[in-house]
Length: 320
Image 1 (cartoon, rainbow, N blue to C red):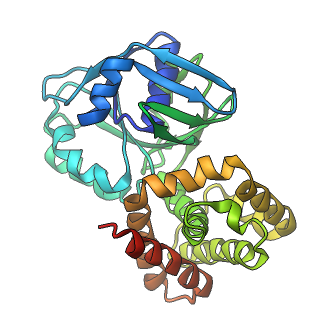
Image 2 (cartoon, rainbow, N blue to C red):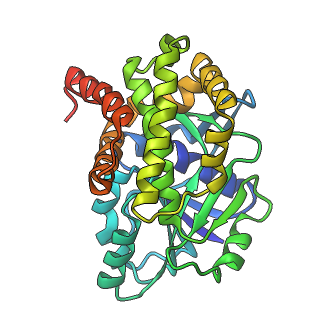
């Protein structure tokens, strides 16, 4: 199949590698310095857990034109950047399927805007790759399991897209997880990841510093529960539901798992590095979480306290 990956960060780079590996005709869209890196060096990925490096020659473009034809386009960008590319998506008349991959807290708004502005009326899906890492010296340091999760779905509860997804991901290492409503999934994801991001900023993006801070780790767990309570109050479903049940019923296991995570390089690569490199995205998601908590009118003391570290970090680094 002919596939475009719109975005050449950690997630987009790994998706490009994996889809190309199984024989698809994959093109990656990049701009500026990243475009030049890919053109000069190829797609270089250090698979951190697997302790190996791959280098692939790939097709590269700088833009998506109205007449460009792909069987599917994956938009893999930070949430705060997606709105700027929607005009390009709506202007294209030859791609029947767009999949937005990332922390899309405004999934409904994205779908509605394309529906109202596109003359071709493409299919819109939303997804999330469970991959971490960072970019460094022209290469991607990718933290992923042997079979990374790819959560995907739409907002209508339909599943008539499964056949095309299975065709795209057949033979890949991705483990596909289908969801009835991806908006529930994204909101749940924000509730879980933002307390961890707050811990990263508390430690100045060096989580090892707080591995022995029992009070901070427990506050983060409590903040996750607060966020989930906010979502339930507002009518969202926790997705996956088992995640909150496990958190409440096996708190000691969760605590020691979190402690192990922040004490090891996995925490640095999967959490700290991302928070450091994508602070604007974390600010954007923090704003979403704050809006949700205010709307719910619930008390969220742990969220309120922990997010002060994000604010402090932003002010210290003078991040706009």
